[in-house]
Length: 196
Image (cartoon, rainbow, N blue to C red; front, side, top):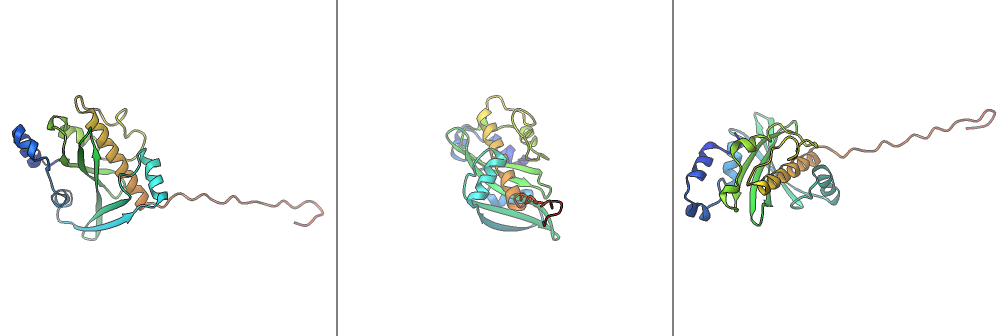
C-alpha cells in the first residue's frame, strides 16, 4: 500500500470546497510512522557537493531540487529497514510533496503523497503509485517502459517519476562511492641487450 487507505478515504470524502482549503494529507512524522512502524529513525543532513549534484543529475536525468539532502534512516533491532527522502516539486504551477522510501537493496519500497496543491482530479490512484514498488534506477524506470501514464494527470505522473528518479539517484550517491578509474599500468619492455 503506497498511500494509506485511511488517508486516501479521508481525502476523497472531502467536498471540493473543503479540499480547496486543505491539501496536506500527511505530515512528515505521520508518513515516517506509516513507512517505518516500530523503527528507530535517524535523521542525517548531507550538503551535496558540486560533484555529488552532477552525479545525481547524471544518474537520474534531473538536477537535485536542493543542495541539502535530509535522509531518514530507519532501523529495526539494529538492522537497516530503509531510508526515506522528501521531495518537493512543481506539477503544473503548484507543488506536490512526496516521500520516497528506498530499501537497503536500493529498490523503491514506498511512494507516499504528503501534499498536493493542484486540483485533486490530478492525483493518480493507489494502483498507479504501486507501480514504483521494487523498481531500481535504470532506463526502464520511465513513463515509456515500466511506469504507465495517467490519462488526465500526465503532469503529475511526470513530476512523480522525476521525484522518484531523483531520490533514487540521491540515495545511490550518498550510499555508494563514485566508481574510480583504475590507473593504467605502463609496462616497460626491455630491449634485447639493453637496460630496462
